[in-house]
Length: 465
Ligand SMILES: Cc1ncc(COP(=O)(O)O)c(C=O)c1O
Image (tube, rainbow, N blue to C red; front, side, top):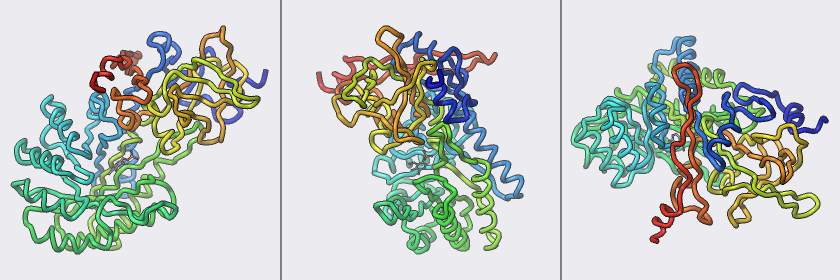
């Protein structure tokens, strides 16, 4: 038979791959036998393979440091973890094994920093980059870190003019700041200039009026972030060059300025045929910064990144069981899964994000075109296209066989925060259990349940019952 699910994948992609392999018609993810995990814990479940987080960080550090060495670049590279992509303690514990810095985005994020500090996970010299539009609570907590706890490398990045006054009011000593320059959005976007940061043409005057006139502020960092990601496009390189031009211009006025922060946006695989040359892109970034600054006789800045999705995205998977099949007409077959897609992978519903979607078992069965239906009553609760194809295929199976299980891979970033893991859920469908997988010192897999399926009591309590 040449129309099994395996044949389909084999004919479409280079398969198996380093991360995805097959044994006894069941899928392995980073060598983890997913079907065994399902038998042990049941679906629906979220899995995090912790070592992948460190692998990602180490790989990016190597790409940057190799480029720095090759190009004789006279600055350092700093990897900051963008906490908003996943705030879980087990993620931060893994991230912090890799000597990285941290980027925050809200007041509670600073509580998270304080907790890590109190637990001796970080020290006062950790670089804490505070991004985002800052409300009063956020400003006060940043001030608490600097004034009361004595953190020495906090860098609030100014999103707007008023923030500087508020920081000045609350912080009692001299401190470093960054300025976020607002990028121009991609031409097909709804807005021309990003709402995040200060408009390009206003930055120099802002610095002259507000920063250089106050000895408390040391402008250390220029921050820019192209929200659509780091891509080899004219748009990306032109935004980078604009930021470099501004950096060089500011450097003539601000002796403390020594860092450029290019934010996040390093992509991850959303299909088995994903191709991205990380080494090339990173080398190009470093080389652009160097060449631009050399031409302007400006020392090469230290380079900071705040990769979120890249750090944690590929460590995560969401595994759902197919609990029913509905043939609604001749061509529309629905596979009904045991949780809501809207709440387990909300980016798929909200911004049409695609993930690597693969069956866990039944790879030797014939494949068929399906729509995957979520368990909520919302008619938008479905998944029926992939990044490489405007349809979804899965193995056929019958009622008297083992149920099919389906995995959405690389779902480790943002999905839990957006769906409010453990909160009130659409149609009261609970947050799935969370399984963590690690390797022990002998290289053997160890797995455990970090949190069980959300129970009715905790959800009803939030609802006032
Ligand atoms: C300021 C800033 N830095 C970093 C990131 C992380 O981006 P990504 O997850 O694409 O790496 C974001 C995401 O919104 C951001 O706003």
